[in-house]
Amino acid sequence: MLKTMSKFLKKPLFGLLALTASCVVLSCTSNQKPASGVLVDENATDETLALYQSLEELRGDHTMFGHQATLAYGYHWAGDSARSDVKDVAGSFPALYGWDILDFWQAGQTEEETDQKVQQSLEWARQGIERGGVLTYAWHMSNPATGKSFYDTTPAVRSILVGGEKHDEYKKTLDMVAEYFKQLSPHPIIFRPFHEHNGDWFWWGKGLVSEEDYITLWQFTVDYLKDTKGVHNLLYAFSPDRSRIDIDSFKKEYFYGYPGDDYVDIIGLDNYWDVGHPANETPEERQQEQFIRSLTYTAQIADSLGKIPALTETGLEAIPDPDFWTDKMLVALQANEWTKQITYVQVWRNANYEREQRDHYYAPYPGQVSEEDFLKFVQTERILLEDELPVMYSKN
Image (tube, rainbow, N blue to C red; front, top):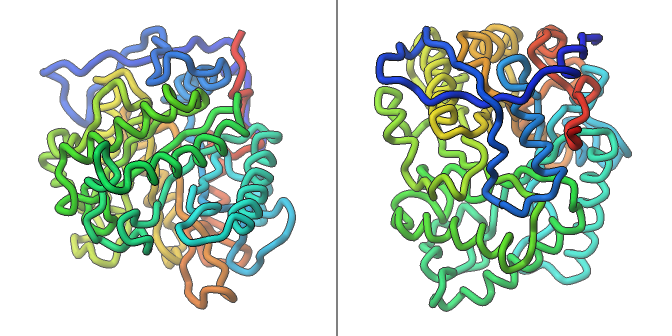
């Protein structure tokens, strides 16, 4: 998969001008201006600022492809060194490595278990770093009120805010998270906490916490990490879920729980809904139209705020459609001048079948029905895997 890299050598950094009221959603184009380089963390490491600028450079021309837990296991394997289902199919690791704080820390595990998981997680992270890949971390945090799963919807947010009975425990958890991230510093990480908050399936979700308390939690978390603990290698991504946003009111409903421009670097969207989710009974053609609209609006919101747009989580479980990658994903990413601004797209993990006994995977493995189409997808000029990335962490 050889693609020209000359465009990365002299291309200026750019941002986008805010929308005008007269702009027609699916036909207007963006103008270019120098990137401001203004991040949530004014003391961000040089490498973190460089990553942000590199994302700006890619914007409009290329979209990085990412995969959750890609080094940890695959559909038919686990425990192999430096392996990935994506690499087995396409010959390269994904450009973006998705990880989760849950990978190494859960309520109730012993200190020895935590240390073992931390060391393994750091090893996988450093493998990606050494190859020039990009790291992003979500956080499926156990319910702090009960110690149970993140799916336990017992109200909990108020208990970990300042003055709450679990606040000190939450700070200790953040101390551990901070130490982990600092071990990877100055290398940057895209951190995506408390995602899909407009749904009601996580304890931090809508209806289980007030919007005000959710915002307070986000702001406290960011301030504590960067100001109290001195973590300066994070970009912060905000990512509501598409299924709980009315497509015709997208630009209003997107901002439910938005913590403010000073607390967000990346405008993300988690969208499984429009790409074949079994609960979505909308006709397929209409789903594709709404998928394109959702990406368009996400990019326009990012543009109006001077931030990076991304499809932070997506995919079709078990990928039964053999043409999913080119007919659904690529068509949307190339639909118009706004969807082309989506800087990265990440699909969810490939659960190991032997261990979990279910077809829960979102990237193809060798022999999977969409394998050939996935190769066509990643071989296009738009999609970048790890071996096609420019240098992402240093700028002259």
